[in-house]
Image 1 (cartoon, rainbow, N blue to C red):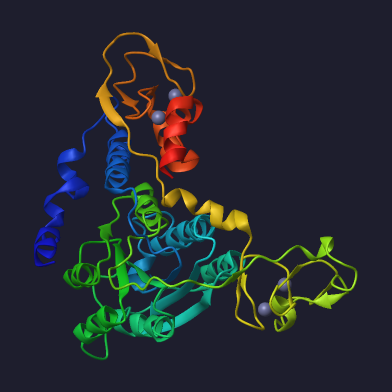
Image 2 (image 1 turned 90 degrees about the vertical axis):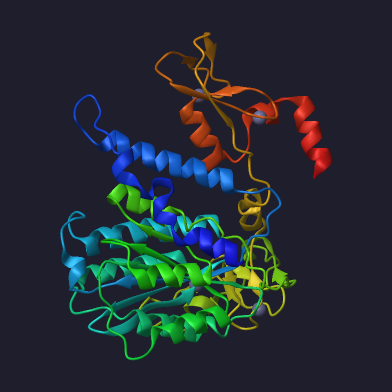
Length: 400
Ligand SMILES: [Zn+2]
Ligand SMILES: [Zn+2]
Ligand SMILES: [Zn+2]
Ligand SMILES: [Zn+2]
C-alpha cells in the first residue's frame, strides 16, 4: 500500500501531465491536433489499465461538487468556466445514467464559504439535468469551501449500505478554500466511510486536492482545455475498481412488467408513486406504468427505488447495459503501418500510408483502423472479428 502511494505521489512527472513536451505545432501552426493526441493516448492508457475479471463498484452513489466561487467567472474556458462546467456536467449526467443505470447522483455547489445541495442523491437524470440548467441563473461569488461541501455530501453518503460504492467528484476552479475547521479531519472521515474522492482542477494543481485524491483512492487531474476537461469528466463514467473494503452483498431487485400488459384491475387509473408528492409538476392519472412486484405500487419510469417498500426496480436491459464492464474487449496491439495494402476489418477502408498506426486484435488477428479501434472500445464493446469468427466465438462462450 505504501509503495502504491509513493508511486502516485509524483504523478505529474509521468503520463500526459508533462504536457509542455507533448504539445507540438502541426503543419498549420495549430495546437489542436496535439491536444487530440494527448487525449487519445490517455484513452488508450486507460483501456490498457482495464483488467478482465477485476471487481468493480457497480452500484454507485456519486456526489458532484461544483465550485461556484468568483474564480469560476473567469473566461479561460468559453464562455466562462462556470457556464462551460454546467454544459459539460449536463452531458456527463446523461452519459452517467446511461452507462450506470442502477446508480445515483447528486449535485452540490459551493460559494460564499457555504455549500448548497442543488439536487438530492437520486437515480433520475431528467431531474438533475433540469436543476443543472436552472443553475445558469446563479452568479458565481465569493470563495468556495471544500470542507463544508464534502461534509454535506458525507452526511448522506454515510447512511448508505456498505456494498454501495460511495464517490465524490469535486470540480474546483479556485485556488483557495475557506473552511471552518481542520480539513485533515474531513479527509480522515472520508477514509473511515470509504468514500472515494476525485478532483478535477480547472486552474492548477492544489496540494490539498492532490492529497485528498491520493488518500481516498480517487483520481486527480487538471483540465488543459474544454476538450480535455470533457475527457477528464468522462473518466468518471466507468465504474471504479472496488475498494477492498467494499462488501459484496446480494441486493434484492424487482423486475416489474409494464402495467399495460397485465390484467384489468392492475391497470386501473392511479397516480404513480414517483409523482404523487411533487407539487410543481401536474399530477396525472395514468393507466400505464410499472407495478412493483412486492407491493404493487405504480411507478412511471425505470429504474427506480420503490417509494413504498424500498425495493430496487429495474428492467433486464438495464443490467445488460453494465455487463460489458465485467468482460471488456481486450486492448488491441498497436503496430506501425507496414505499407502492405490491406483493409480494415471493421469498416473495409483501405489502409494507406496516411494511417500511421493500425490496430490488431490479439485473439482473432484482424486489422482495424484508428476510428474502428476507438468505436469498438468505446461504444460497441465487442470485437467484430472475434464475434464473426466461429472458432474464437466458441472459445469465448466456453470460457464464460
Ligand atoms: Zn411518475
Ligand atoms: Zn414496492
Ligand atoms: Zn475501420
Ligand atoms: Zn478480435
